[in-house]
Image (cartoon, rainbow, N blue to C red):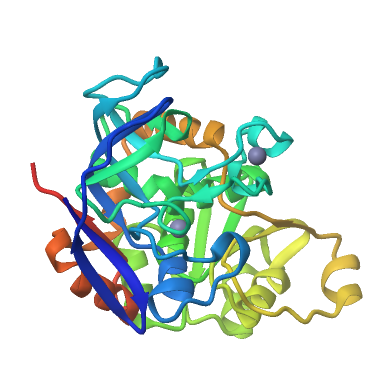
Amino acid sequence: MHAAFLPGNREVDLREVPDPSPGHGQVVVATRASTICGSDLRAIYREHLGEGPEAYQGVVGGHEPAGRVVAVGSGVDRIAVGDRVVVYHISGCGQCDDCRRGYQISCTAPTRKAYGWQRDGGHADLLLAEERDLLVLPDELTFLDGACVACGFGTAYEALCRLAVSGRDRLLVVGLGPVGLAAGLLAKAMGASRVVGTDPSPDRRALAVELGAVDEALAGTDEELDAALGDGAEASVDCSGNGRGQLTALRHTRRWGRAALVGEGGQLSVDVSEVLIHRQLTVHGSWVTSTVRMGELLENLARWGLHPEKVVTHRFPLAQAAEAYSVADSGVGGKVGVVWED
Ligand SMILES: [Zn+2]
Ligand SMILES: [Zn+2]
């Protein structure tokens, strides 16, 4: 089979490797879609920056896969050949408290491995996965929808659930990359009465409005946000991952409001009394999601008729994975996906 590796230095290495075969509790998935995440660019593609759970160990890249099961090993009983599945992208120990709550992302056992980071990921014709890491994709959703849920939409949904976003809220979304777009689309489906987004890029602002992810897109100055939101939004989410954006999200959250920090990275310096204490804010740090919440999201997306693939602006076959990464790295469009045509 063909597989793409990420040696760093903005290179993509396409190689021929042996097909995997499933061991006990494992399945082989014929990958149909494998999208590119901001964290792939930040910690692997440009240079190998990651440590601990983000240390890339020279495996097949891609941690947002969806596909069809083509082989199952012994002891596999929930998933069958032919099932359409999404891969929750971290394989935890399965035994610790975090794993048992479904938050394999937070597993600290030495056996924890993330697909595309420490074990082979989705940028290959076939993917070896643990049965317990798989969610069945509802018939209403496409493989590309599933890939978008595997990390980005799951992450955005988790943050909105922590914030308990409802029709009582206006939501501020800082940063309109793929996760910001997901946050806006999901918040509207969850009933948010108004979504205001900010991004320094005019292209990203235009795309967010065009997709209906936001009602209004601003560059993000305090004056603009004061005019748009008055005392601030009832709920806010930072998807920018930089200190300035994070501070914007906190400062434009209304008194007694709730904020979630989702964008990875950044250093935040904040006047604690003025911005947080005296304004009675609740602030959540929210990292990815749980398998349980991801299953709930898939069910809701089918019911809402919302297709996450609408944020995918560029699609490439695996043979053009290098172009796919180059486009994603340029930061111009929305999500970039590697797709296999049926
Ligand atoms: Zn990701
Ligand atoms: Zn664990």
